Amino acid sequence: MVDSPYPELKKTHTMARVGRPYTDRKPPAAAPVWDVIEGYGRFHALNSALELGVFDVLAEIGPAEAGTLALRLDVSPTHLETLLEGVVAMGLLDRRHRSFELNDTARRYLVSDSPASMASLVPVSPGPLENWHRLTDTVRTGAPVDPVDDDASFHVPLVEGTFTTINRCAMRADRQLRYSALTAPRVLELGAGGAPWSIAVLESRTDATAVVNDLDGVLGVARRTIAERGLLDRVEFRAGDFHHIDVESAGYDLVVLGHICRTEGEAGTRSLMQRSFDALRPGGRVLIGDYFCDEQRSQAGHALMMGVTMMASTRRGRTFTHGQIGAWLTDAGFEAVRCIEPIGFQEVFVGVRPSAARANERGARR
Image (cartoon, rainbow, N blue to C red; front, side, top):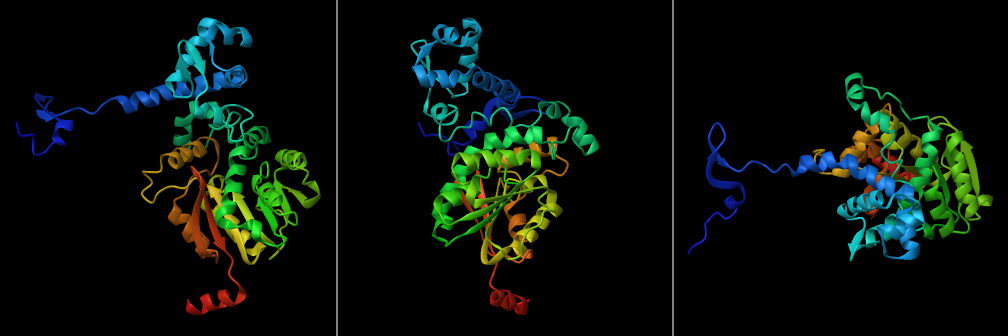
C-alpha cells in the first residue's frame, strides 16, 4: 500500500468534518493553556520544597521515602509525598521504588551549597507576588502598584540569589574576553549587587582593582561577598544612584552594567552607555549582561517573559533586542560591538572605546 504523498497532513487533518463552518482540520491541543495554568502551582510547589529543605536533606542522606523525609523535616508524611510527586512531575526529582532522589538538575541547581545553586534565586525571581496579582491594573494605568526600583529590602535578597549565576557567567566570560591577560586592570561595576564581575576580575588578577557601586542599602551585600574572598584591600565602594555618582573620565579598563539596563528604559540605558564610554580609557570595554530579545520579539521566550516581570514591578522596566543594544552602543561611540553567551541564557554585549586616532578617523568618515 502506498503511503500518502503528503504525510504532514496526517498530523493536522482528519476524515471527519467538524465545526461550523465545516472543516476537516484538527483542533489545536489545549496543552499550552494547561502548562500556563499549572505554572502558578509549579512555582509554589518548588518554592515550598526549597523552604522545607527537601533538596539539601536528600543531598545529605541520599534516596529516601516520604515517611523518612517527613520525620527529618517534621512535616506531614502524606502532604509531603503529594508535594514531592509534583516536584517529580516537574522533572526536578526522580522517584524509584517509592524513594525520592536528586537528579542531575536538582543536584546542580537546587541544593543550596552547589557551586551553581539557584536555590535562593527561585523565591525572589518573580518579584513581589502581589504585583502579579494586580498585573491587569498595571497594564491599565501604566505603573506597577508597588514598584521595587529603590526598595533595598527587595533588592538585597535578589542580588544574593543572583550572585552565584552571574559570577559563574563572569568567570566563564574570561575565555572570550581575556580580562585576566590585562595588566593591572581597573574595573567599574555600576549597580553591582554582590559584585560578581568585580570579584571574577579581582580573583583572576592580583594587580586588579575595582570601584563597586550600588544603593546604600544594597552595597552591604557587595562588601560581604568581597570580604569573604579577602579582596577588600583592592576595592573602593561608592554608594548612590548610578546615574549620578561621581565617575572619573577615562579611568577604567572595564565598565560593567550587569542586569541593570532592563530597569532603566531606553533613555536610562543610553545614558548609562554614555557614562560608560566616558569612564573608559581608549581600548577599554563596556560589558552589558542581560537577557536580550530577537528582532521580532517573538522567539526569545525567556527574555520576553523577563520583560513582563520587569513591567510588573518596575517603573520603566523592559527588555531590549540585540539590534537595539548594538545600535545604541554604536551611537555612544563604541566599536567592535559583539554579543557573547558565557553560560546559557546569560548574554553579554561588549563594546570597545576606540583610541583617539580611531575616533577621529571614524568622525572624518561620517
